[in-house]
Length: 438
Image (cartoon, rainbow, N blue to C red; front, top):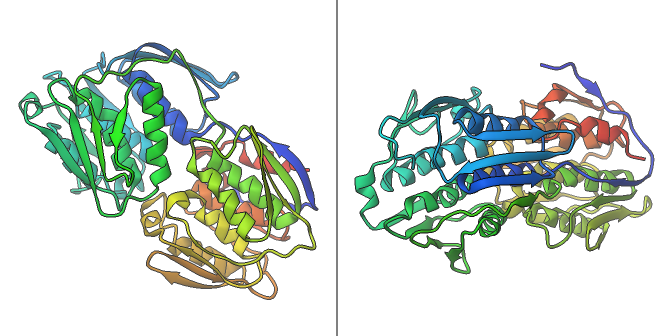
């Protein structure tokens, strides 16, 4: 565990930043490039723990990959869903995307002697995977649990070709994680040789923008996904095959951008984030609209987003459903500490299954600052104190807990972040970029 980090306050801001590449897009692009034929060059790729374990996992399966970290560029030699190494132990850390995407893809490996094991950090072994495993098994996957049913580690055997001859229709719950549906969508073209694959979603689908992102990226790699307007059913046509686009550009990370938007909201002044727009693949750009409701000004440009707040203009508490942008809920909760009136964050029950319980643990840390916090099943109600207290923040090995609360220290003296290196998971240079804000 890394030593605590003291955050130094800053004055009113006037900064321009470019966040690193999107983790969500980088890990999807690595999978898509691996499943296509030929070489794909990914530009703007993010180098962090989550993308490193995905890269290492694909390399461990025998694919040819080259990573130029200085140029933020990865070359992937795809083999159309075939993997030279028939057996592998794949370590995924605490990366939900890596664990779930690779489990789905490897479930469709037809080689009779194939045997793969997916395992990670202790917290990864507490994160559910049962809904995905049951859907994959219905399509012919052979998957077993190594210790506790419903949770990694999982062991993946050869694809059951007999099931492949049946009508390929499967349902999957949408209430726990959109990554289950994304994993199924990414892998489904590997099961379309004899039939189209039809997927239906039961329950409320959380984090819908990530599904839209997945489908747009699949389209860039030659796969059209048919869906209805409510994202309740999906179809991948028989014979669907991934095609490499040659070069694929990865956007800056919109979730990472939220911390810099919030810096402007909390400190006053302006921060412009380059490389993102209202038309981004990532739904988390909509976080800026929450800040607009809290009395900030937002300017949407063709290739940048600027958030401004005049220092004399008070922040206001809001009530907001953050189901579709739940990765930014912790960030908004920190803004709530500096707002006038209560802030309600609703419909995010699924974040209890993330790197930590992001509702219960968030409530604990907000109270250290003197806030009155009502913890609800699916969210929080936050009433800021008349005078904020300095606080030492526990981060629970959760990168978003560390980054969100660090921004509070740009205005409030005495904020200390425990285990700051947990940000290596998705944003290794976070504290350097934070300190360089002008």
